[in-house]
Length: 298
Image 1 (cartoon, rainbow, N blue to C red):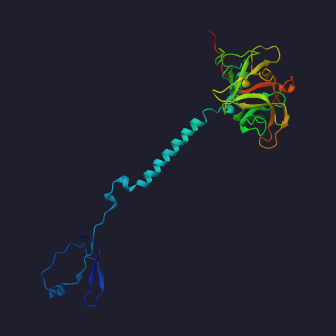
Image 2 (spheres, rainbow, N blue to C red):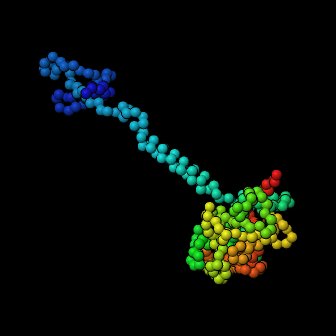
Image 3 (spheres, helix red, strand yellow):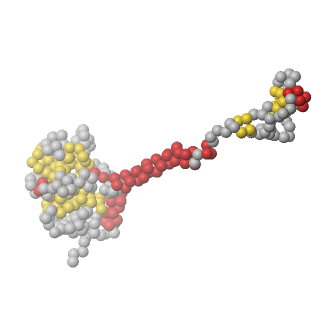
């Protein structure tokens, strides 16, 4: 232990036995053992009590990182969460085309009087000409028929599950940026789930026509995904404002929709199916989208 000087001293009154504080100008100091007798100590003045303290380990003896380890841990955790959130934001949103930006891309070209051509690689929404609903799909299977991923007509414009990528038929020389002529076989890939617009002989849930579904995957496609582009009118090359029909190769059915709506899982969305006759209800238009420029042929 070490003697510690204190600013206040305590005097022991020899007569009353009480300890009293004395305010001397000098601090307490170390005292050596005295050789004088007890009688001499009593006559020399009041007895002083010197307080001694043992030196304990102070926080200042530890390094700064040990004193603030908890704060440092919280800081590292916060940095980790921020990095994870940034990573998820970049990766998860990379495939989503903001509808406002996509609409602006299409409307800007239209406002300038430029004819917007649809090319392979274009990401677009198909609007049903009569009801104005958009061709839509989501990761919800049919409860009947094939049980494959359902396809519906969606009432709102602002929905990322209504985007489709225009792809060529496999085995052709068509490439991204090529224009598409009437009569060409194309495929439509759902952007969010990467499955293909598909049809077969299963009955559709509401009307009992040909079921239209989403099926397959990025490298899993068959003739059930093939649709022939038929332009209405005199145009020969697919443009944004042209009315079109899509005829399924395997079944001969035209991509069709009507005002018959689902009431439960896809409440408010209308049925999309295939019918073998040309009707006013199987006409579509290219609406919102990101339209790629036509590639220059060499």
